[in-house]
Amino acid sequence: MKNFIILLVTLITTLTSTAQDITGQWNGVLKVQGTQLRLVFNVKQTKNGFSSTMDSPDQGANGIPVTNTTFENPKIKFEVTNARIEYDGELSGDEIIGTFKQGGQEFPMNLSREAIKKEIVKRPQEPIKPYPYYSEDVVFENTKANVSLSGTLTLPKKGGIFPVVILITGSGPQNRDEELLGHKPFLIISDYLTKNDIAVLRYDDRGVGQSTGDFKTATSADFATDVESAIAYLKTRKEIKKNKIGLIGHSEGGLIAPIVASKSKDVNFIVLLAGTGIQGDKLLLLQQELIAKANGVSETEIEKTIQNNSKVFEMVVKSNDNQKLKTDLTNLLNELLEHESKDEIPNGMTKKEFVSMQVNQIASPWMVYFMKFNPITTLEQVTCPVLAVNGEKDLQVPPKENLIAIKNALTKGGNKNVTTKEFPNLNHLFQECETGSPNEYGTIEQTFSPIVLEEITKWIKTQTK
Image 1 (spheres, rainbow, N blue to C red):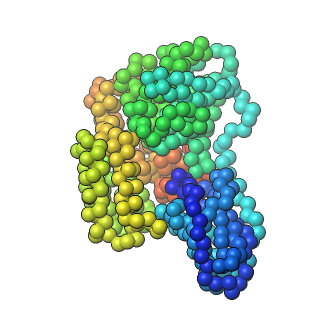
Image 2 (tube, rainbow, N blue to C red; image 1 turned 180 degrees about the horizontal axis):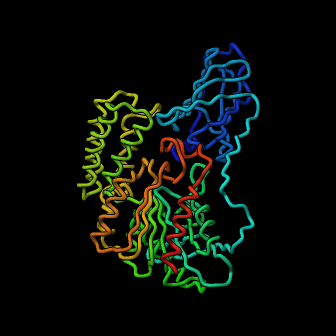
Image 3 (cartoon, rainbow, N blue to C red; image 1 turned 45 degrees about the horizontal axis):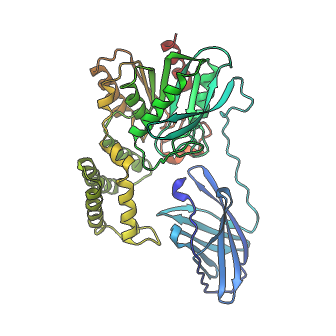
């Protein structure tokens, strides 16, 4: 949802017609990948026509100035230029039928005079308090990075000694539940494992929730040191079996877990949920191709995008000077845009601003590290038992290419306890799905396949007997 965060902007409004009264409050619900966001446009009459503000109640943002309001009966348009927001609609009685646009993407959204309530999102797997186990909020320190990490430790019961797993989130800033699109996968996993006599530690990423630190400047290697701090903390707890500490990493977390396990003798086993086995730049190209196909993009368009991105990614992989990389990327992107239509640049954004935004994303510390990193180098050094699982319809970390690479690297390194499994009809979040497209994630009621939960639990119990 981060691409749709509403920004505060300055206001100048204009108007072209007063043929019909459009003043008052107009309410709508923006639906993006299963997430719902209420939006309200407040229209007032002025000497020169109309002025408007926008509210986003679910984000606690009210009175956002609308830069431009135009009304030519029945057409109405609201623009919030600095946020690259545009709403186009047609007035029909007490309703406006229209489209919300931001950052080059479009979503149907109708507005009404009536107050609109969000649809209740069903997440039937989420546990309801009180839980039948012990749950404790904890804080531990990564002294190397001067970061304080806040999390939740769940124990099957308050007394006793238990094996434990540390949950490692996927890419992007995530809280301890790995919350996204209305789902809380880590809450579901934690609940299931704890009910099956396995303790679980999950925590907010650095700079997220109650954890300190700067997420934006951190790489996968930095996040690995946070996991090491979690291990050190668990070794201080009397309820934990010190020789039965395991890691479960999802997506990027499945890249981080082997980094930690390759260096630490304290890791007894690791579970890779859609973990990566091929270098980051190659993975991103494959991911982009598969998602584009699932979304109905033409073969010609896909081929052109892959060609362009291959040039960009190659430049990143070969770079060793970030400032020079930014200069080279700026020149390359300007060159590539010369051959593209102006539709590539979002409304309200200059070409220079668009290129600068792209360069800063591509040349960020995390992205540069990810593109250059080859998981094989650490997987070959992992000697503890490994379970690697993927969904058959995972378009973000395609199963065949990654599971084969993971198994080959571990075997080459001499690891004799390796299990890989591909589950039919599951996506990157391990939900039962139709196509595997990320567009489906938020619309699916299921958060995490019970079949995979059972498989993981059985395997962990075998390792921790």
